[in-house]
Image (cartoon, rainbow, N blue to C red; front, side, top):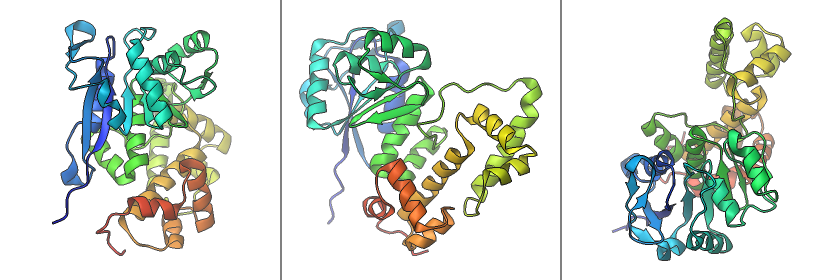
Length: 328
């Protein structure tokens, strides 16, 4: 009888002042059992200095189920943001983060959690980000950190940081996708009723359309829906602009205002996700995967995987292909 694969061990690092929203996001992504839908089993532990309840805002408290002694077992450590982002973390927490970093454990901080990683000295000389309203404070308090001006999440080595609120969900789904594949991340996203894919390089702050721009917004949404339904076709920015009834320059400007990214980066990102799903679900040859996902050639697909995912399509299939995938 085949034994089930061991659960992936995830640590939610808890100390006074952490944000209840971030705790909820982490718990929703890794705390629910979705193994019946093909998502790997996760063992999520709430890790704190001691066994006492960890106070949060408005009378809430988090009950730890492990102490810092468990942290070396974790494959991923999540650091929630803080209600007061400059709240100093307890020194035992900072020391545990430093040891985990040396071990090579993946560590991800949501929103103001970047300040905690910076307090531990882990972000010195590294790219990082936080909520756009806190970026200047992060630079001022920790000048050795290379604060990214505009993104949803960013990774540097085994350290990940995200922007505020919803960007924490994006980072969590990205970490699921990177470790377990696009299908697992999409399943988690569907159960949370949230978007399954937003590129980390997308802008944090997107201008909200004014009433007179509603028609343009609807048109762009229709163009994006068309593009997603025709990813296997040789779509160009000029062709999409023509479909929207705009010049390419005007289309690119309106597209970036609505989505926070360029049409080309948006298109490539969704083609990568389409290719990932084909690699996971089918045994189609690489040229056919490239054609169906819109890359046109295996060489182009391989270049984009190397640039965006730091892997190759063949290595991705070897890691994430379903054992019972259909032939076509």
